[in-house]
Image (cartoon, one colour):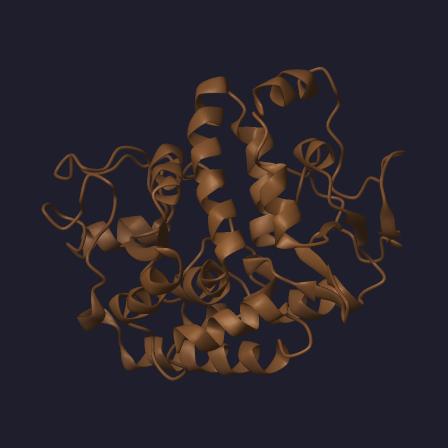
Length: 320
C-alpha cells in the first residue's frame, strides 16, 4: 500500500529550512532535509516556484530497478481494474517501463494533448505553490524514487506515485480541465479558510476515486493505481463503503492516511466531476461550516450507497 500524505498538506516536520535557500519557506520533510544536506537544493537550484531541473544524473541503478519493478507490477495488474482513460493515457505517453522517465520527453506528449506539463519538485510543496502550478497546467512531481524496502509503504509521494499515478489521466481533456479548475479553486479556498474542505475533494477524487463504467467499477485515483494492495481492496473487498459521488457529502467527510480507505466515492463520468467544480464554492463552504463532519467510515442518510462496507479490518485510529 502507498500510504501517502496528501499533496496539499503542510509539511509535518518542525525543522526550518536552511537560511541559505531563501527560495524556500516552510518546514522540512525527511526527504527535503536529505536533499538540502546533499546540496541539491542550494541556490540557484531551487526556484521561487519550488521547482528544480529534474536531476537525471542522480538516479542510480537501484532507482531504475525500483521503478521497473513497480511499473511492471502495476501495469500488469491494472488491466481490467483501472479505467480506460488511465490505460490509454499510459499508452499515449509512452512512459518508460524499465527506467525512471525523463519528464521532458513525457511533456512533449502532454503538451501536445492537453497543454499540461510535469515540473520536478523536491517533495511536498506549500499549498499556494501547489495550487498555482495546477491552475497553470503544471503538475508538480517529486523527482526522487522510494527505496527498495519502501515498495509497499511510503509516507510522502515519490516519483512513481506522482508520475505513474497522476500523469496518465492528464492526457484526458476533461480530467485535465478538472485538475486546472481544482488549482484555481484551491487558490480561492486558501483565502476563504476552506482548505480542509477542498482537500477532502482532492483526496476522494484525484487520489482515491472510483468511476462507474459499462464494464463495472474501475479505478482512476492515483493513490490506488500506484498501490498493489489498494488496487485490489478498493474494488474487491467487502470492507469499505462505495458511495455515489456528491460534492457536499465529500467535503464533510474525513479520510485515512495510515490505512486503506474506509469509503470510496464513485463518479459516473469525468464530465460529472468537472461539472461539479463549476459553481462558486464560497456559499457551500459557508453552509458546510454549520454542519458536522462525518467519519471516514460513516454512511449518511442521503447517501447513494452502492455497497455498504462490513468494516472488517478497519483501524480505530483517528481520521483526518
